[in-house]
Image (cartoon, rainbow, N blue to C red; front, side, top):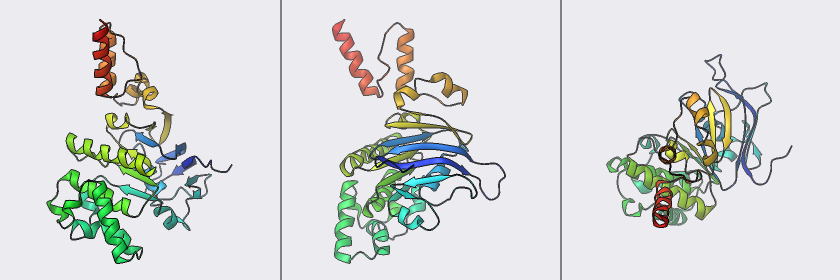
Length: 285
């Protein structure tokens, strides 16, 4: 069956085992990510989340002699075409310090462009544009080591934007940031996603971050146990508790209010939405 034009990523019967292990990390994994959507993968350490991100980018390939098939933007991920795939997919990793190769912010953002032979004047223009998009143009001549964690992740995002990927993978990209830095990064990603029609895949332990996505995939022990909207996923409290996952703060508040006799719609996802609803409810009372 051919891949739908509306699908950015498709996994079919994907199995993966690391060379030094006998146990499969992924067991018959099937899912679809729609173009222009934000999909969050949640699950405990060892559930297979980061392995999936590396398979999307061709850093890893599925087990041989299996029915595994991964399609990214209409192209099957194989050893022969991984470089084509990597031009379309960018990854922002957990530790920003591991992503820098340039002496200055500008040099670092230009690195991918230099590798592609982009003319210097065009390169300078692109670097300045993407740094502006992440609010870091004033740091173009700064040394990355002197920046905060949130600023470093913004530079990492700029470096990826410079080469114009269609898919961005956030592999625990906000886990080392304080709440303020995390909020800034997610705000930037959401704005860029809308502006550039990007597809975002977020690998995260942060349930509140996952709650911002269009779709949530729940992984447990190498298997997908559910994929649905955040509203539906995080209302399945029994399922999540069984595999040791929490629910977002907003959902906890809604449950507490419900127990207190205050009926609240289950489709509210953020604290601001909940606050607005309660204010309206208070006015009616």
